[in-house]
Length: 440
Ligand SMILES: [Zn+2]
Image (cartoon, rainbow, N blue to C red; front, top):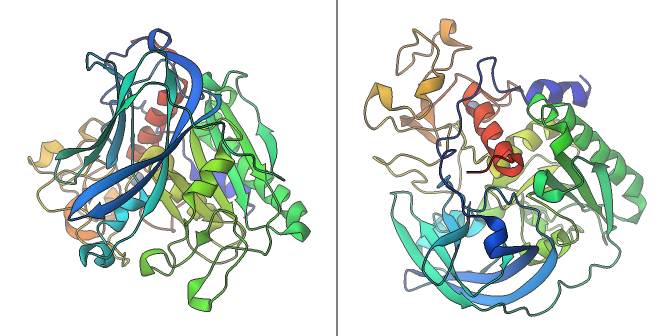
């Protein structure tokens, strides 16, 4: 089947019944223009663990282009992810926040990290330029609901320069929504691992995935508020690194298989290089298209999604990983091996909107409002419930004690191309975070 048709089926409109509002939708918001200029500041950090504690070092502050975030939603009330950047005024009032996850947080659950081996991670965080002195805070949340303030910094407007130039990189407009990036969901595709002889393929691949995304109902409904741009450049060499085959590839952002020893875990190894590139265009969400026919990928909430260009399952991987990175969706599967240890500790509710531990009994699924009538909870895996929204046991790498909303979903297996109703609504919430003009 032609890819666009597959993807049209893939991103199902969020159910016939309308989605409920996001659980945090009624929370109040500060007035953006009172506190910020519409300019993006990028904070480059290094992070590591020392004596069991997280350490943070500032590598620099850089002024980027116009602020692309939604000025009507400066504070993020989702409480998703393992981290949050917070900007407070001198009185301690929260002016801006952004929840996110990181490769660093995932690494902390690996054997390597648990054995105490050192490793340094580089990250970049963006915030709008404050009009007054502020305090920047970085918080890490553990999977048991605890929060640790790992870094605090009095920010008086320091700028270490403009972002470095990125020679030989073209910014392509694949689809233009609203002219104002603050009123758009700005998706930035970075096409990586295409050498000089593969530039026509690069453009064709970008067009293919951008068109497919726009044809998908969840995004088609907001077509006038979605902008898709791409960064195109030629690399020295082709494809990502494949350490098990001793292939270096040609990635400009350190794209590599075998992350944390997991053969199919294709990630960005040089986040700093990626962020230098990403500074060239407004972006709310970053996706790296890697020129390879091998199966693999990754999606980390508000960091990036990575997917291969030419695998038989490239459409599935693209949609699945974008579900992680943009929607904050968790893996609903539980049978594949992963590199993590006790990713979801027992007795605690995961933050992901599509996984529940059902801690307070059958009525406590976080998608209770979306359950189909007459569906028992927990929901037996029987044919009559094959298309129901229920509460099915087995999710988040665990066959017991964690539950998912549907028997099958693109976050569960490659067999179906659609998101379940709960995942569809979670995506809709995130689109609204970027485009809603409601004043709260
Ligand atoms: Zn789902």
